[in-house]
Every structure is written in C-alpha cells, then in structure tokens.
Figure 1 (cartoon, rainbow, N blue to C red):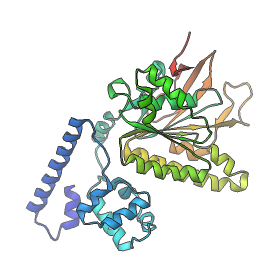
Figure 2: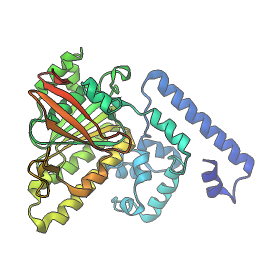
Figure 3: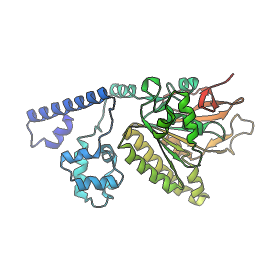
Figure 4: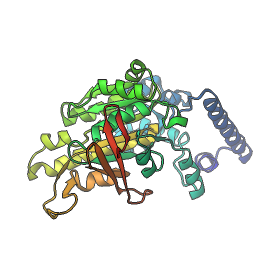
Length: 361
C-alpha cells in the first residue's frame, strides 16, 4: 500500500503524511476484519457502493451495477477496454475509477509464505462421503473451479445436490455457512432430493430449500446471462457455492459441426472465465459437471474409453478435474484426473436416496 501511495503522490505528499495514511489504512483493515470475525459474517469482497466515499458519482456506480460489476474487485480485475464498454462512462472516468480501485484492492506481488497463509484459510465443502473427502483432502475447495465428468448414472447430479446442502452447514462440520446457486441446463434438478439430504444431516428441509437459488438455463446465451444475475445475488448475501449442471450441454446443441467449433469454444471460454472471476471475487466453490464422448483414439478394452468434451478450453479453466465411473452395485469410483495439489488416486463412494454417501460392502 505504501508503495502505491508513493507512486501516486510522490510529488505532492511528504513522507510523514504517507506513513500516517498507510498506518490508518492498516488499522481500519484490521478493525474491519476483527469485527467480521466476531459476528461470523466476514466477507472477502467490497461492495461497489464503497466507491462513493472516494468521489465516484452515484450515477456512475449505478451504471457499473447495470453492466454486471457489483464489487470493487470486479472493477479492479476488469480491463480498461471492458469498462469502456459500459454505457455512459467516458474513457477519462474509466481511468479515474481504475486508479481509485487500485488503491482499494491488493494486486501486487506477495511472498510464497503469504500465499501459503492465504491457502490455509480456504474452506472445503464435504461431499457426504468420508473416503471421497479424504481423496480431496477435505472436500470441494472454495475459490476455484472443480469439474466432474463421467457417463450417465455415475452420481454427477447427486453430488451437485449433496453439495447444495452441505455448503450450508457450519465450517466445523464440513460446510461454509453459505447459500448455494444452482444453474440447471439439463432439467435434472430435484428439490425433493434436497429435502432428503437435509434430513440426513439434521437440517430443516424448508430452510435448506430456501437457501438454494435455482434457475433453468434454456440456451447458452441464457446460461451466460444467469451468471450476471448470480453476481448480483451474491453481492447481497453470503453464498458458498455455484453449481452448473452441466456446463457444456447447451454448447453442444447450440453449436454443431466443425464449422461452428471455433465459435463454440470461444463462447465456452468466456463463460468459464466469468465462472473463474466469480470464484475468486466472492470466494465461492464453483462446481461444474461435464459430459463425455467416446474416444476414438482409445482402445476398446481400456478401463474407460471416454473423454470429457470441451477440449483444452475447459481443461485449462478447471483447477481440479475428477473422473467418475461405475463400480459394483450402487458404488461409484472417483479418480483425480488433474489437480495442482492432489495426487492421482481413486476413492469409492455410493449414490443413495439421501445423496452421496460411503461405499457399500
């Protein structure tokens, strides 16, 4: 912060003034964090209304809100070109706002030790299965995208339903004490299943249902629009999870043939980029499901001759990729397909009437 202040005002402020301002900044930040921890509602993002204290007009803040920017972080992470597309904002205003948010959001280098401390504060969401949680070193990670893929009846949608309930539980029980957003592209969302899962974990089913915001996406453009609505919703309350089931189904049907492949991948990449931004901005876990196709290069006698669709676009966007396949009876097998931290390993789980549970002997 001092280095930013020095750059911006090196010809106007004496060093004593800069030191005093910096000290005040750190004291206020520490006080806000302590207050948040005491009432249990600490929020990582800053509401856009905070720009008003720095001289930004209310009308300009409303224009940013209408364009889908609901937090100071979303403005800080956006490019000048993207902000210039907001109706009613001149280039001079955009540059002024960018200069203001630079002083409000830390976007500089930090040590690996600080990065390690930040990761220690990450919350994981329990999947409902002890072995699966062990495989994932606690559960589904917040602040990043987790992708699961597999053929039908491997438990992808049941895992989505289970997470919508477990994310509401206390942190000590494997939850994040937050609400969930569920974007359904295949018409497989069943609120009755949420009731059964809530009863299993000793929660009030009616409260659990109220804490899940559900929307049915009808085409790939609508799917992207729903993300903008999700950002507005999350800026008003505490959310812990975004589910997209499935992220790729509508892109497969809206774009067909090799002639539209390039356009499909470009639109899919923009959708995934928005998901990544929401995960980082609000600190929520983003959980997406993906479909598979037969792999013509794979051998017919291989254990799994399918591959996830979406190619390198979805592979690079997802932080953790999990492959699901069928086991004996109601048991299923989860394999860590790709992860920056988790080793390649398997875990068994089961799909029951109350969601994901431990594997049956």
